[in-house]
View 1 (cartoon, rainbow, N blue to C red):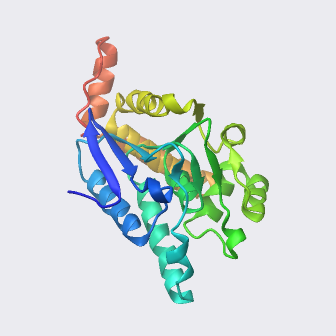
View 2 (view 1 turned 135 degrees about the vertical axis):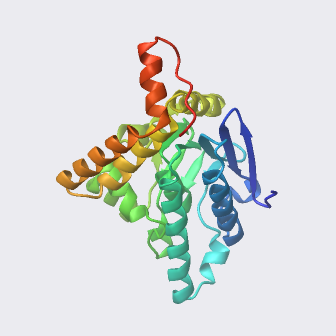
View 3 (view 1 turned 180 degrees about the vertical axis):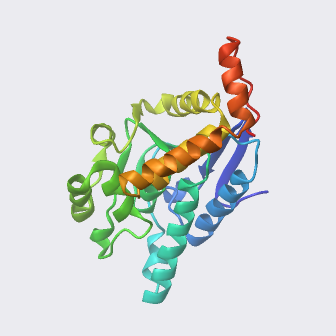
Length: 260
């Protein structure tokens, strides 16, 4: 399947998804958003894709935000619908059941930062800048940024970023926990690949259950979160992956997980 605004291929179990609008700093218009959604739906239903590396074309931007010309023409009702669609897409990415690594190769602003927040992990180049500048346009983040950012970096830092609209450097993003790693631009994709390969050597079912435990359990009171964890722990024991993983450990050999 071809895309007008994306590049996508799969190599050795890793899906490489690139927003390909470098002339617009990979800003997201409605068509691009729809294509990202279609591509992630495809990824979610392809057992051959074990992990995803999500990035932007060129060296200037991951995703520099929304297409402002398109945004400015929205009515209030259309704006609410646009926000709801974006939130639905990012929730789907977050709950894909497979690790999604954002390789942030420059500006990740507005919707671009929100996309990165919805990913499982974030690796940034040393030139990256991340922020939610919507207040500078007289609006607020609409793709879940007001909800995910405080949960990731804390309420105080999130409010500083949202209310000033100022981006943070890659170094500051690492300090506050907004990104997991900072590497030179030339090492960005290799670093993301290295992280993805470490993850996908583990049991696919275990990865899915762990993601569910963290994402859903984190929204629950602790006792309910622990109940969810125990339930998923028990479900893991019903999988062929668990049988293979424990047997391989006891036989002192690498496990060969089938994702079942």
